[in-house]
Amino acid sequence: MDDFTRKFNLATEKDAEIHQILLTVYQALEEKGYNPINQIVGYILSEDPTYITNHNNARTLIRKIDRDELLQVLVRKYLGQ
Image (cartoon, rainbow, N blue to C red; front, side):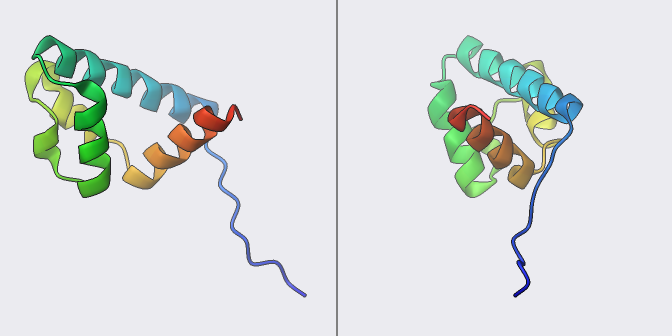
């Protein structure tokens, strides 16, 4: 029987880029007085960029990340893998 499970492997460099973008977005949201976690979760769930401030180019930066890649990185980091 064939196994049709897809395996995802992201390069370490891509993970580091996503990490840096998330830190920048987090800091920009915090500087503007928003709750960064709530805003980022809202963006991930809806893919509506208005959850992210334009401050420090945060909205443009977060839109560079594919949402599926972002979720994969977050799950991997949460599980310590």
